[in-house]
Image (cartoon, rainbow, N blue to C red; front, side):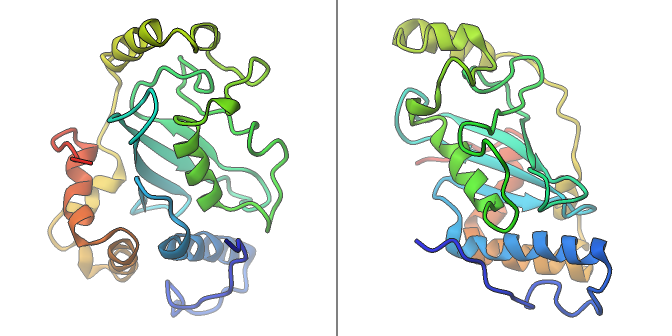
Length: 224
């Protein structure tokens, strides 16, 4: 599949000049979100923060491997100078995994992106990587490990699953992030918000839009 992203003006394209560097960077991110209709991996759902296009909230549903039937929430934080610098991925669900730091829950991107390449590496590639690290153990190397305990027992399936379950019970301070604001009455009256929601429906479908915030609130379980 081609990874070339062609220019588009259909999402946030009518907001006037993109002459400033900040505007062009924001437009790049907005455009990348729109193109997920072509590139988003199955089982990964994301939506931008209402106040900042640089933050995306997501959920990954695992359908095979040792993590089968698990669902994990995460956020992607794109730096101010994106796409020149790599985004950061942090899970907002407790996860036991060799590539995820057990204290910060930040995912190590270096196995797939040892050097971030602007205009060649894109967020949709990170979304695919987020899904694949739960399925493909070839990413689980000792030099890239951020959770040594998980790496040591990676081939001991019963012991590993026990630690997965134990970690999943940890409590996290999941404050109501700005993504929740999308469900407030009148949110679609804002032009930018409305366009994001329209793009979400095209990418993920109407049903997933209706359920997304329940997943974030841990009130809904997806049946795969």
